Every structure is written in structure tokens, then in C-alpha cells.
Length: 222
Image (cartoon, rainbow, N blue to C red; front, side, top):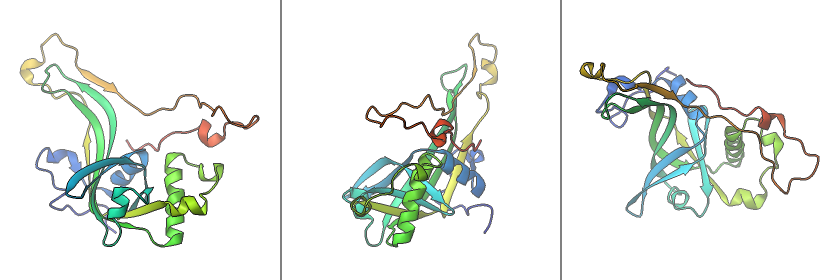
């Protein structure tokens, strides 16, 4: 397997091509760090974009939802053409001019056909992966789905084939003529951090906060 995804017409940008790459390791790291993706598709002739949880296992991205959801129903059979996007915000870029304000970010866009996972073993493993993607170690810290819950859930698999990653980093790109203006310019860094865990009000007494919750963090990709 090559270290980069092959560019396609759908993953080749028309603007700022210097920010776009196809490195597999970078793509994987961004997907693994992100908690939420947005899934775009067309159903009943109308575009829809929905936030979803996701999990990457090797070169497959897993998505899931209720069996009654429009996207899940539409994927039955030949599958559903989707565009999945993930964005991590790393900083607010404050420039001297309004025009040059921006964000530092890492984003992944994946195109392809998402199909329903029919194999019971793969579906169970994908559901575990989706829980682990929320909090590493959580599968061992909660009960598995019941048969009813399992039957009510559809899992989709999207092979990672048409994929690109786009990155913006560094300070503002102010114009030379603006450098002497009396306005502060720079970057306000952003990161995802967890506050102190808040127990459910109906939690049984004596159940301590598990280590995987106390030490929760996201994989670092940049």
C-alpha cells in the first residue's frame, strides 16, 4: 500500500492547492482525533448534511444510525454516495485586515459509496470501534448492546479511497502595506480538553470514576 491516497477530480482543489495533501498517516490521525464528522448525501432529490459519530478501522470509516433514518434506509442495496468531512480547529487567526482573518485547521474530505454492513461479526466489531472512538477503554466500561438495540442500528462502511487532507497553520498572511497598522495580529490557539467528570444523578453509590474517564483525551495528530 502506498503512503498516499491517489488524487482524483473530486479531491483536487481549485484553490490553495498548497494546503492540500494525500498522506495516509495524516488523514488517519485527523480522523482519529475528531469526535464528530459531517455526512453529506442526496436523498429524495434534496441535499442533506448530518453530524455523526465515526470510527476508522484501517482503511475503512464506519458510520452508524437508526435503521429508520433516511440515510441508513437509502444505503440499503447498492449503497449511498456520500461526502464525509471532518474539521479540527487549531486556532483563530486574527489579522490586521478584515480580509485576512482565518482559522488554523486540519480537515479531511472523503468521497465514496457507503454500504450497509451485513456481516454480524464486522458489525459488532464496528460498534465496539465506534464506542472506543468516543473514549478509549469504554467498551469494557459499559454493557454491550442487546439484540433489540443491535437490530435497531445500521452500520455503514466507507472505504477510504478518494480522500484528501487540508491544513492551514501559522500566523496571519497580512499584506506588506498593513504591517505598520496599530492593530494586534496573531493566533489564538484552540484545543479540545475535558473538564471534571460529572456523575449521572441516578448513579449507584460507590461507583468511582474509571481511569479511562479520568484520563480522557484525544489522540494528538498535530
